[in-house]
Amino acid sequence: MSGFSTPAILLRRIDHGDHDLIITFFSREKGRIPVIAKNAKKSRKRFSGLLEPFTVLELVCRSPRRGGMPVLQEAAMQTPFAEIRDDVVKTLYASYWAELLCGWLEEYRPQAKIYRLLYYALRGLDRNLAAPAEMSIIFQVRFLTLAGLAPRMDGCVACQTPLDRMGSLAFFFDLEKGGIVCNGCAADSGRSRIRISPGTVKQLAWIQENEIRTVQRLRLTGSAVKEGLLAMEAFVPYHLGRVPRSLRVLQQMRRQ
Ligand SMILES: [Zn+2]
Image (cartoon, rainbow, N blue to C red):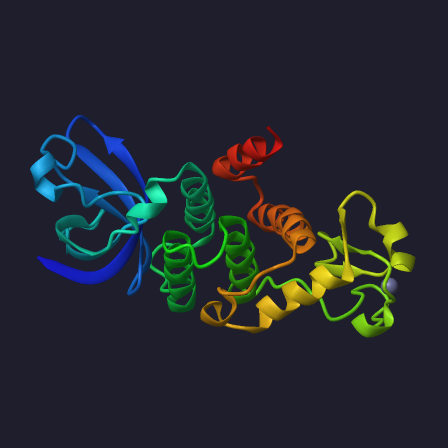
């Protein structure tokens, strides 16, 4: 019988029959992994409240000899991030990030930098290092960079005019072209464009170039938060191929 141990963040859990849970973890050593927690539903004592969304656990798993899902043997709490679950808005943002990673990460492919990003984004949310909306912009911009999907923000992606010569008028974020376009080129962008100001582009570009630990204490301007959320919450689902359910709920809640 072989097995492994790894720190891991709980992304999603679903019921499996009357007794068990199937849990998707983002593990540091193995990337996204599905794990079955036997009797976790039936016996509260079995994992005594450890298996909550966004907790960071040290897992010990057993791999069945004939393949199939690893079985959770032991779990020890590393970081509970309990403040997130006590707050509806924080929970929705964290759920959006978890859903995004469930959809994007490949099973058993380690992604150490993205693991660290999620850890620090959850920590920032838990400890109020930035407002949840700001933390979400940071998470999405950094995620796109680490995933190799970073939008181009140093000039117009169509005519190559550099940012500092694009003028001070608002320009556009083009989802299909994968970056900003100047006013002149925006006419060809059709419906895939979002209005964005030069100031917002500069703030997003700065986040793109720096680690989350550097940028998490950044205070974005009000208009950068508004425009940054609009652009990132359109661009990320564009690459994911769907709008995560928790993002839909979050956007509905903002409209009310
Ligand atoms: Zn242009």
